[in-house]
Length: 525
Ligand code: XMP
Image (tube, rainbow, N blue to C red; front, side, top):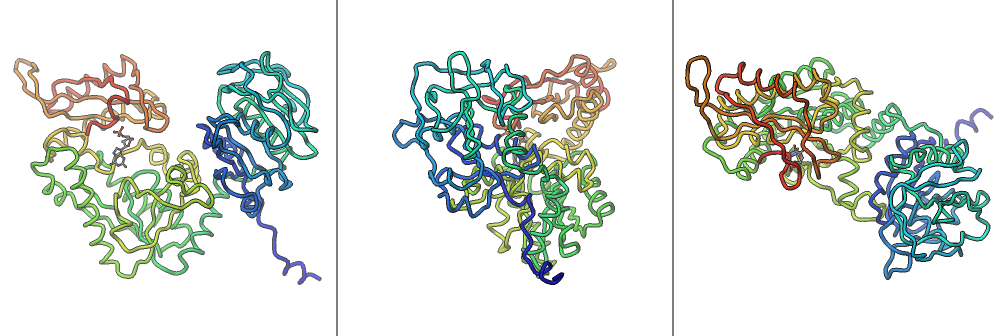
């Protein structure tokens, strides 16, 4: 008897079964998937074109239909395979997703002439979605059409002054719809509603934690690479660091990391990477000191694109040399994130999987004949950080601001020389130290110093100076696509100005960049 039990195939662990977010073209589709994951339930984004049978093959715990920009009556409006309502898993339609649901299931959707945008009061009724939540609450709406009759058998459980059907549910068939957006922060009880749907309706346990991700990912990597050797380029950034640690956890010494110090890093950064990986984590690490090589190539190069191209090419050359020395390597680790996968169309099950080449090590996979290991391809950036924390990566590495592959070279306008690098490194170190001291580091997307190619006149002591200015660049942003210049406090600016000018020879002026993106970019080159 005991043998029979052991021989039975185990059920896949619950965290392997996803909540599928069907993307109907809404701007918040990714956000819905992230919110579900924040509730510790694994979730993936899929195209609305995926047939119901393929969705069923993933054994989803639930399906969520996203919002979308269309009207269900518009020509070519995105819809779903109606078979998905027959899968026997709960379905939650959000905004346009709710309207698609109503239309497919015999309800009615109409352009009522009433549109709602933004903050909207709703009155709710008891039921599964609003269990334990206030009867009157604020929701965030964005719609022109409205559901004017729910699908047969469904009960209306919320309405606003101008939209009587703001939510419906049919527990017997597992169908739920909300006209508002529970995924945005402007719906204060939105998260609670999602939890009601996930935990109570879909019976999805909150088991998807950083620790679970690490175990699953390590098992997947082991299965993928077997006993082959793996190579990883460390940049000092959080993505490559977490990717490397995951692979190291999975296959130990089969992984070799190569850290190319191109001399364009911030103060003490190279030493920090070597210390963290080599001494602390015992990851086999090749530290290539290529500082002179890069500096020599950069001599006399002032045009931004030329700088970038040259650094990218040189990086590949150095990396290839090292890979050759290591001999028989089959796999290359790449820190592709889930947002890259989604943007390139690969997030949609069934769609062609084209993967962007990694920003930091531009072009590596194409030139090197290696297969890719991508341990972060199902994770969003904030999840990568949580996994990094769980793996024991030091806080300052986990929360490090983004840093461009070409490094300080694109923050030095004009000639990149050792003398000018030294000035910028020192200014950057003072800036980061003071911003951290002011408790502002985590609030800023990025903050760094720029060294322009001009000099100006000043007076220090009794003497005239003719020296460089330092420009302070600090921005807030969600995703680097747009950014706003950060309103740093005056007393912080005062300290920065005084310290940078007094402590760094060759600097006699500090300026503040107050440009947003667009029209400026975050970096200066
Ligand atoms: P921009 O300057 O275009 O930068 O507003 C947007 C974001 O991208 C970062 N950035 C880079 N990151 N390699 C990178 O890994 C690069 O070549 C590169 N160039 C810009 C920049 O720091 C900002 O976060």
